[in-house]
Length: 283
Image 1: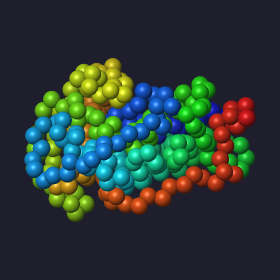
Image 2: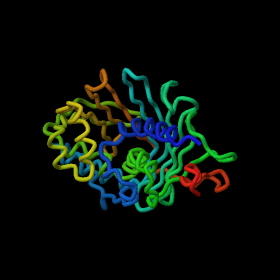
Image 3: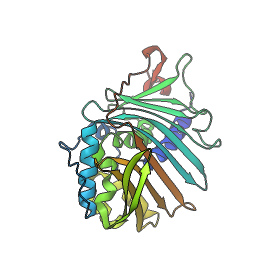
Image 4: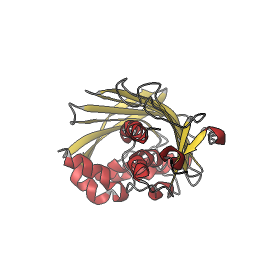
């Protein structure tokens, strides 16, 4: 049993997923199971004129679609991280995502798989995760409050944020400028590319429970960054990209396809799952 290895693996995945969502909760595990979505779509082919309007239209259309397939990459001096999976939004939020990372990280050997279903988080993989014999998954719920559970909270935050479209695109609310940067086909869909300049200090004040992520960026010396998003005539996002001037530069891109696809996600077989208590030797 290696709780430290589990925490390291979870951090690898959290860092990858954080680049694919633009907001997060307050970091507590209980916060991650309280999800809300926009109630109606503002889909329209009329031009977007400001960052707040873009946020409202994109988050509403995505929430109404209900589900999506996503793939993402994050490239930095430390190496490339990539992943893909399915997300279902709303009160029955569920996600099934896999992530691969550089070979020297906890996620490097075979990658990590993370599943959230029925308000329970499951993690599989990572060469440094030691589990009891016969177990291949670790489970975590909002009721877990051990130090290890706290160390895993950033990962659960990143996964849960992916299920809340208002939080996923929260960076747009902190935009100070918006410009249209042409039209482009993304995965066969005609889109308009918008570039929003995000003021990090403003984001801290307007992003609500997502403020913590922007505070972390400010602490790293990031004052502003450009957030590019490609949006179809149905107001659904098809791709986004941002570049952060930290750690030698980090470029993150995510693609969204199969909006509204049927998503069937189930928990792993119970006999393959170890609880956090079992991992710690207290259960």
